[in-house]
Length: 122
Image 1: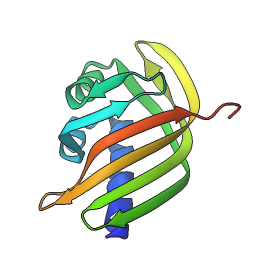
Image 2: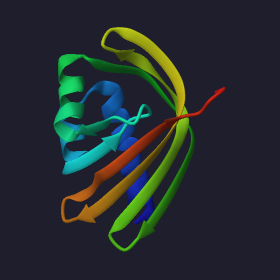
Image 3: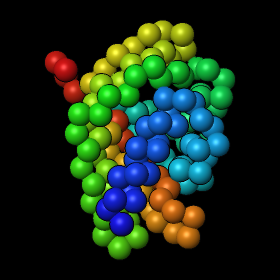
Image 4: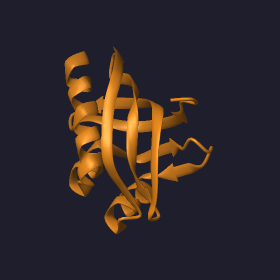
């Protein structure tokens, strides 16, 4: 199951980079909650809407490290890497750590919670 979760994480990264709404819709649980680096809380609708409207466009997702833990039908991924793009037309680039909690069911892995932190000095 660890390999399938690692594959789901990589599929998520590709979907984010391509703003692939269909893939993101599959990978995000309907009740997912994101905590942004600024402490803001976002929903699945917020995330899909940002990609759909072009409010958020990623131009780079460079993974430096990915750690994966699976216990039963729950998984956690810890992504460390550089991300760049635009938010609301403003360019950004940051080194980030994402912690994502995933649940596995008959449809595969889906994110139920996620948190992003900016790595200072990175």
